[in-house]
Image 1: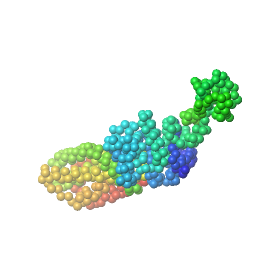
Image 2: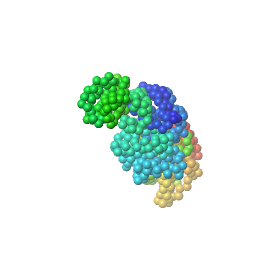
Image 3: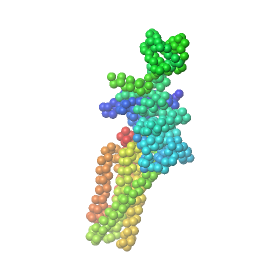
Image 4: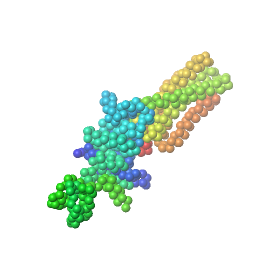
Length: 310
Length: 238
């Protein structure tokens, strides 16, 4: 897949404060890149640099094959964004807000009207198209901001905390919107977020940032496989009384416990799920289900942030 | 500068202008009331001594009414157009689009200047009608005044609005720009009343030199500010 964003040794200083310290990552076409970090980690600064609002102190960022330091209007015409607090025009209607940006991006008149209608229907706001934004709820504004980011059919989308402070129901709607955009329209998404659950559900690649430094950057697939916990949960039809004791005595097992018709086996680092399965089958036990436990993104995030603090 | 980007900025400013209608109307009423006050208080006393005749006085009123109304309206709308954009943080999204600072600045300045100029012309015409109806006086405007009103005034409006708009972009401290704004309005008011009282107006308004001076100042200011906006960093503006 071609690279859409490449960031190399990016550094940003505000006076004596170092906001970003030599960060590097790359995002390929069609990826949803989750950019995680606590408040003040430098997430918004990175996004502002990529959007051309801030100039980096040093380092390089390539967006859609152009160096962002050139501040190319052509590149800015190929990206969409939702910044914190939506930042819409309160004294304009929903339709006018979209039309303004469609005009800025020089979307032809016939396509403009069609796009605005399609997007307002997509975010469920067609019925409110003539209403002033000042009267909208936060959720409605957020959905409109997402529609605005798509009005010119951009290739790359930058979303800064798109679900922050919204009802769980609206959060799900927005999350589904992003998933649809990637699946159906093959967009590349740069997602700044605090919401670990959201990132885990929709992102294909993740970077964790802390105090301006990237602690980890990898694909979700790799993260899942590398951060597998040496723990297996096996559901059996029938569990003999001494099974737990027997399993505990095995060389490759650290610990074992029983929960109803399940046994939870904690394995040694070198052992695998196959080893315990082999043992159970040798004993002619009927295995109904095997589940490998893995660290959640939350576990990993907290672990990394804690390590960085120490 | 992105010329195509000007149209959307102008379109949006005109759309938002609908919600500023009441403010503009209030200002026009204020301008007319202010001029009526000058007319009432000054006319009887100074007409025979300071001015050679009532015709000169009427011409002075027309000349300054137009300038005063234009500045008062322009300086008020500019607060909404530039300051609100910054307060509501809508400038940042704009700067992430293909628009640049100069285009945004110029688009806003064009609309504000045009609106304030058109309103000032309406006020001027109203005053001419008032003179005609109540004092049975038909004001004949000299060539320099006509050039001033129809050519130099719009440029002067653009230059002043452009200057204040630029300060709104440069200074993050809104108080500074508010001070400049108030200073221009109060300054204009004092200038008008002082000129009328002193009678300087008679020699000034007829002068082609003054019109030419205003023209040169306006053109130079517009050019210099437009040039300066190119060097404004986005980081400073947001």
